[in-house]
Structures are given as structure tokens and as C-alpha cells.
Image: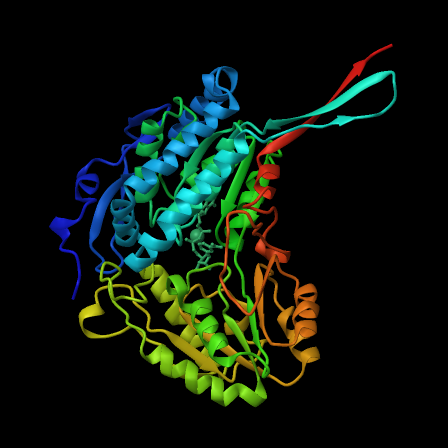
Amino acid sequence: MSLVKEKDLLCQQFLAKPKKLLIDGKWVEPETGKTFDTLNPATGEVLAKVSEGGKADVDKAVKAARKAFEQGPWRNKMSAAERARCLYKLADLVEQKADELAQLETLDNGKPIKESRYFDVPAVAETLRYYAGWATKLEGETINVNNSFFTYTLREPVGVVGQIIPWNFPMLMAAWKLGPALACGNTVILKPAEQTPLSALYLGELTLEAGFPEGVVNIVTGLGPNSAGEFLANHMDVDKVAFTGEDKTGREIVKASLGNLKRVSLELGGKAPNIVFADADIDAAVKGAITGIFFNQGQVCCAGSRLFLEKSVHDQFMTKLTERVGKMRQGPGLDENTQIGPQVSKEQQERVLNYVGIAQKEGAKLVCGGAAPKGDLEKGYYVKPTIFEGVNNDMRIAQEEVFGPVLAVIPFTSVEEVAEQANKTTFGLSGAVWTRDIKKAHKLAAHIKAGTIWVNCFNVLNTAVPFGGYKMSGYGRELGKHSIELYTNIKSVWVNLD
Ligand code: NAI
Ligand code: MG
């Protein structure tokens, strides 16, 4: 096995250091005096003790961010080009530390090292660079009202921004949040997920090296309810909260915003329909179905968790699908041969296995997986790649977000039928259509109520292309120029010329 020995890990030195909070440009002990453990999901062992930020810590971080926003050099002295340069430098540093960061991400989250190294880390650098480019391109407009007035708009940063992120793509979610917020001139308090705080802390070190002035980037680790997450969401001096996570938590964030009516953007869960017609390139669709549900151990908000198969190709498709899935190599993320790693935590493993039981009770037929593997992998939080067939769209397994490697296969016979079923979900983050019929593809792309539609592909993302949800998958669009809207305010200025 090409597993890297622990003592040879590049991130060993970082792991050994105390994990403090980044407030006002300095690493400080939490006022709570408390820590929590972050675990290696491949083994269940403790990787590091991390500071548990509380109310006083969030207050301190918000004060620092406010001071940096109102009085610091970030907006008062530095030009847009200088702010851009900090982001470019941060991207360069991420690339220089790519191997180390990839190991850290894999250790903390469990994901295969090939994905951390060749997907997550490069995507982080690209996201930071893409938004660095925006810093110098923010513009207002002049508006011709009449000759008595000169009227123009200013695009200004929102102010102090709280960013609460999940554990499925820890560093990439940090980049999706930090990149646009900083490019627009805001100051930030980032709250990483308690399951995976390490790469954000490492990124924090790099922000100091990249030259961001003190108080511009603050990182407060901690838990959600009655902890750093909730205190940040509630804070009266935070102007905006950006959140990615569970829909249930999204509601709490909205409630918490009521105090000062802070702006909120939400990127929540999904239950994407992945629709395969008989006229599709079946081999490509089989591969797409696998990427759609098993990428990142199924812990993806846009995962293709509902696979709709046209009946005439159902059996042929299932034979090809199960054969390929049977060959997937499951193991620790650090093993370079691993294709599917452990779930992020014991809670997530139990949640996923619980849904397996629910699906069986509802009458879905288990085709493969459905259990934790035995033997070497037993101490990690693994769930075998799991497929259910004979699923009905009304079953809980087809309606609730499992967030694991569990595919629900639903047969259909007509376009009308599948079009209706695809939208029968409370979510609307993504969907996909596999067909060679261009009319069918475009009609369904328009019909499906979701923020992203893939035609003959799945899980394709790019920093320049907006991403976000319809319905209960949230509101606001991240990535592309749309993220700039989330982090700026428009001010109209009227100058009397009479
Ligand atoms: P979560 O939504 O509770 O956690 C995400 C972040 O929110 C973490 O940083 C957490 O500390 C914080 N948080 C939790 N409660 C909070 C509160 N009351 N106020 C402020 N911040 C709070 O997600 P969790 O519990 O880790 O996972 C549960 C399920 O959520 C998953 O099984 C999955 O279905 C869904 N989920 C969806 C994600 C997505 O990308 N859309 C990402 C992570 C989870
Ligand atoms: Mg939660």
C-alpha cells in the first residue's frame, strides 16, 4: 500500500503546533479556555486539539474586523491593486504548499489524496486568483437623469462579514467565501466546521504571510449552536453572513439575522435528479452517475442522489453500473489508490447507515453496499458504496439529503413523467440530463427548478460560473461575478448642478 507513513507527512510540524484563534493579525488563546478534538476519519484518532471560540472571542474578532474596516489601511490607504496583490500572493502560497495542504485536508476530512491534491488545492488557488482579478474591476455607473443633476452609483463593500462553512470541501469553501469578500474590500470572520478546521487555520497563517493587514481576515474555530457559529450569526455588528451547510441550520441563520437584519446568503442541500434517457451515450452516463454520487464519498450538496433511468435501458445500465461500482477501491484517503474514503465523522457514518435502514423498510431493493466494511477499515467511518433500485420518488431516501455514498435509482417511462418527478423535491441545487436529443435536453434544462443543470456531464464547476440554489437549496449565487453582488452595496449619489 502506498500509504504515507505518519512521521513522513509534510504537515506533521503544523499538526504539532497549538491551534489558536486568528484575531487582529495575531494567534490568540480562546477566552473560553476550551478546546475540541478534530479526528482523522480514517482511524478515529485525534489529529489535533483546536480552540473552541465562544462569545467573547467572536466579540473580539468582530471588533478587530470592524476596526480594520473603518480605520485600517485595507480600505483607507490600499488601492484595489494592492488588495488584489494580497489575494494573488495568497494563491501563490497555496500552490507552494500544495502537497502539505493536500495531506492536511485528506487527514482532516478523509477524502482521497488525489482529489485533495489535484482538485481541492488547485481550485482554491484558482478561486483566489479569479477574485483577485475582480478587485480592480469593480465599477459604479453614471445615470443620465436630467441636466440639473449629476447622478452616479458607487459599489461599496458591505462591511464586516461572517462566513460559516461546512466540512465537505473545507479549504475550497473557505476560498469561495474569502475570495470575493476580500476582493470587494470587506473584512471577514471565518468560522470553519468543527469536523475540519485545520486547513482554514493553515490558510490563516498564509494570509499573514501574504500581507493582509491585521483584522482583515479573522478565523474563529468552534462549534455551531451556542458556540462560535451561533454567536457570529447573531452578532449585531456583523453586516452580512454567508453560510453553506444544512437547510435546518440555514433557517437558524436566517432567524439569527433578524436582530440587525444583516444580509444573508445561503447555500444549502440538494437532492439532484440525474436523468438518463435510453438515447443517451450509456457508458458516459454510467460514469457520470458514479461521479455524481460517489465523488467526495457522496458528501456533495449537488450530488446526483436520485438516478432516474428510462425503463428500456434500466437493466443494461444497472449491470454496467454495479460492475464498475464493485471495482471501486475504498480505503484511507492517504492511500494514492483510494477512490472512496471514509465519511467525515462517526455522526455522518451513522446518519448514512440509518438511511440504509429507512430505505429497506420503505421497500427499496439494496443492490450493493449498505454497510460499513469489515476488517482493516473497521475503525474508520466508512460506508460501502451503496445502490438502491426500485425506489419511488416519494420515499424518504428520494426526498431527504443523505449526504453519503447512497444512490436511489428510480425507473421512468416518459419525458412527462420524469419531468414532473424531477421537480418533486423541496430542494433545487442541481440536476442533469443524459440524452442525444438536443430538444429534450434544452426543454428539461429550462423545466428543472435548480441553480445548475448539466447536460451529458455531472459535477462540472468553474469559478467563473454561478452556483447556488432554487427553493430550499438557499438563495444568492456564489462564484462568477454574482458573488460580487453578495459582498457589495450600491450607493446612489445625486449632485445638484443648478
Ligand atoms: P451544519 O449545517 O450544522 O454545519 C455547517 C456549519 O454551520 C458548521 O460550521 C457548523 O459549526 C455551523 N453551525 C451549525 N449550527 C449552527 C448554528 N445554529 N448557528 C451558526 N452556525 C451553525 O451541518 P452538519 O450538522 O455538519 O451536517 C448535517 C447535514 O447537513 C449533512 O448530513 C448534510 O446533509 C448537510 N450538509 C450540507 C452541506 C452542503 O454543502 N450543502 C455541507 C455540510 C452539511
Ligand atoms: Mg448541524
